[in-house]
Image (cartoon, rainbow, N blue to C red):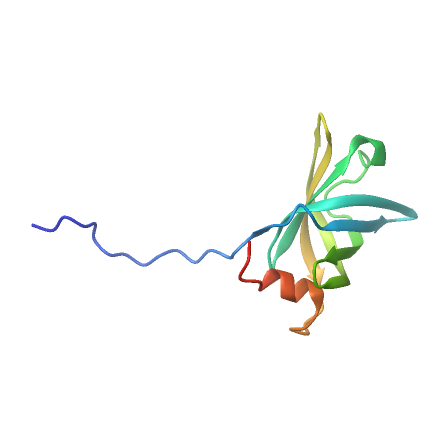
Length: 117
């Protein structure tokens, strides 16, 4: 009798980095906001901004440009807001990354591919 579970194919999961120490400056229209990354993966990011930054008018399907300061340097990318939530301590947005530097030595790529985190 087998005591271990039947082997099955492990589902593919894309690694997500919990990187709340990375500041982000993003542009939405003519406005600029300061936020922090909560999560980062090759497909998207989650941002957190304090109430003082505003942002309640940022809604789904809007494009933003982000400058992300990582431990490897600062890099820019673009994304589309997929969702937004208001919390007691500020706002959170889920962003699908639409334009990310492809160079493996780019700070965003280095953070996504980092063995740490």
